[in-house]
Amino acid sequence: MAHYELRCRECGRSWGNQPRSICDECFSPLEITYDYDFVRASLAQGASDKAKFIRERIAQRPPNMWRYAELLPLPAGFESRLPVGFTPLLQAPRLAARLAGNKNDATTAAQNLYLKNDAVCLPTLSFKDRVVAVALAQAQAFGFDTVACSSTGNLANAVAAHAARLGLKAWIFIPSDLEPAKILGTQVFGANVVRIAGNYDQVNRLCSQIAEERNWGFVNVNLRPYYAEGSKTVGFEIAEQLGWRLPDNVVCPMAGGSLIVKIKKAFDELIKLGLVEEKPVKFFGAQATGCSPISTAVKTGSAEIEPQKPSTIARSLAIGNPADGHYAIRTIKHSGGWSEDVSDPEVIDSIRLLAETEGIFTETAGGVTVGCAGKLYRQDRILPEETTVLCITGNGLKTTDVLAGVYETERPIAPKLAEFEKYLNETLDTVEVAKEAAATVGA
Ligand SMILES: *Cc1c(COP(=O)(O)O)cnc(C)c1O
Ligand SMILES: [Zn+2]
Image 1 (spheres, rainbow, N blue to C red):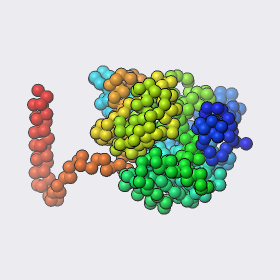
Image 2: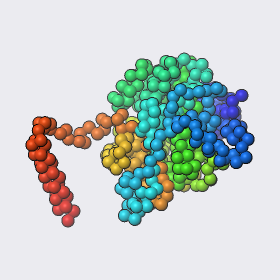
Image 3: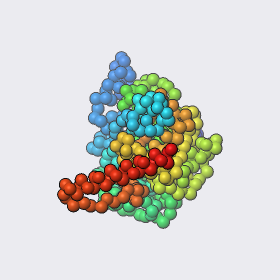
Image 4: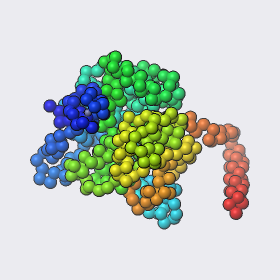
């Protein structure tokens, strides 16, 4: 018997372990529940100071997401050969200084702002590697030889890569207008890529129908409850990397709304196991204005999602009818948090701001997070003295198209010192002229 099983989120009915995501009784989503006494006992091994022993035991394990294996729905005897996760948690003083308003605030914020950098999550440079790692472990245990997904891009990359490594066949369904780097970054792993002339929500509906017909493991359809648990590792890592302490605020980008809900679940589990002290954590959602069904609901005080037709450069977040939208709204509201959204030009400015201040090149989703965080500081919903973590979930090299035309292509110069000196003088002149012009406008 496994120490976890599927249970209906609403009626509580238990469904054991099987590839299924919806309760047949009440049509609500299923979620994994654990026997926490068993988890605590197997981690503590009879130690007298259980919390201290468990924290030290976890700290001694290899630096990847499998260090929290007991809190994931993994098949008996599962051993991963792929070190996913345990990405850096970085202080971001220079970004903080730009996001927080006046000078005093900026100095204080500089001490307290952190970035969880999944732009460097391995192997495919987004947090989706975490969810896929768990989903495919179960796909193998359930006996699937073919895995599949509907994707806004990053999930496609992750499923294709992990499937290649495990020797599974992969079918990937994507909206036809995805960024070229995300399409190529799926095809390269030998996956079958099916481009659909439609948006993500249409692709997803098609996948639900295909899942009824074929014996395939769809990571975000019939394996969705297992997939979603992988997101908890972001929360576990944030707490451990803060020294087994919870932050005051988390700012999280939202597509289907699963990640933000699961970071909250991770914190609750750590509290339940006595590994961190209980304290209030505010959850802040971030979306692009062109696809903001969750943030719109939060702002208008609605408990339900009104589906939208996405129109934004933040393609990885472009889900108009988010599967976990209802639970994301609840997580945000119950925590005393809020949700914001930013326009496409703000996304681009924020990508550049993060790169120029902290040396991290994020994709559009990260621009959404940074842009929304700036708004939240300016609204005093996030205070400079509070420990705040921004979730940077994907890598900028996958969405370079959005920066096309932002930078001038430099004219090449001859490989001669004199040429360079001339070039430098011209460039400095231009900078001076621009500065003077700006000063004149300012005065
Ligand atoms: C999928 C994705 C998200 C959002 O995840 P959900 O759990 O669906 O809300 C955020 N950022 C990036 C880069 C993603 O690919
Ligand atoms: Zn039910």
